[in-house]
Image (cartoon, rainbow, N blue to C red):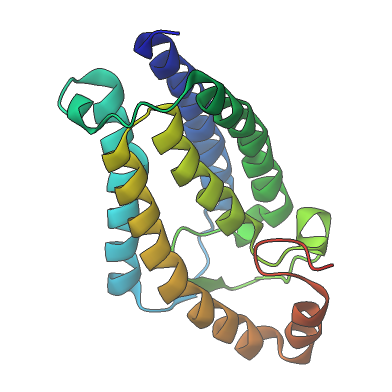
Length: 193
């Protein structure tokens, strides 16, 4: 297949992904006060991820600037990641639906924050993070672009490893033993067996 076909496939995924985020992000906005944790630091990390998950992939689709970063990935591998990508976008929508108004792009506890332990959250504590790992790897493979892949994984990895311990501490402070028990029965980003 030509590179333009792969770019169109990725663009279709991206548009659906963006619409899911916009729809559920709007639904999660609440006028109540929230307790944000490290808001400036979190915003910087989210900004890096914005570059890795939006700016660079779109630059790879719409400009020739990143063409020199091609990895020559076989079409069969790219197709596998495109199929995984469509499943992953469905997962993204399901995660947002399960989280409801509890979702936020930065670390925060909202006024009527609840501990979600149903749906996808029944077996995984952080399915959104599992989704993003798949997303940043998948976009680099589908677009066959090492810069998109490496920057996306590095930016996301930095946010993930700096955020998760703080997030779990925050949830333990809010929900106490209920969250500790929940941690015993769930995996962080893959189901606990």
